[in-house]
Image 1 (tube, rainbow, N blue to C red):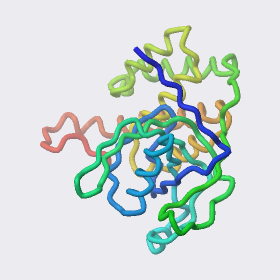
Image 2: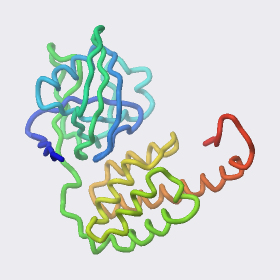
Image 3: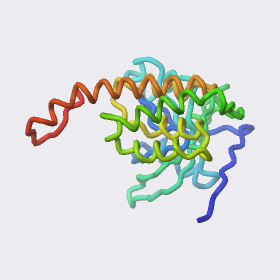
Image 4: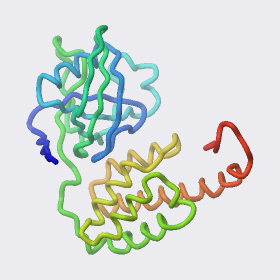
Length: 237
């Protein structure tokens, strides 16, 4: 199997794609359908270059009224690489983004006549080498939780436990895996953003642990629904 290394040049502006949710995480993947002209241009330009896009999140709720302008965006972003793409005859794109790294917007580039989309200068965050010894307690806690009901039924639980019981896999890598792949609903969006914005691995470990605790509680509350025949299955509300 061939491993491809993706290098991010933080000395150059990066296209910014803001949404109202945190969709892309480092080491995760996300699929998008690109419809709007400004983002079609962004994808076309990115594919002509190194294929990098910074996925951002709107600040507050005013973006709904300002969507077609330049609504405020929060500083933390996930820099993603276009791993796959397909262009439809009408100009739309279907793309799959691979999360490369977390970053922080330093400065937005002023609007340019030839660019319909936003660009920003970005600095990397969370790139320091983690102290794995400080994460040993989290490793035991996460392994125990994911090996027991109801979390062991999660789609990602098996892989996570396999990694946690393998001493060759760093705890920091498992925390990144969980942060990128834990199932989420609307209530988790702020926690997902905070996990993306956290520069320290210890802080990200705390957020992942809290999210697992909340998910465990939710699954226990939903468990009685599994005992009742319901064509729509388990309800997250």
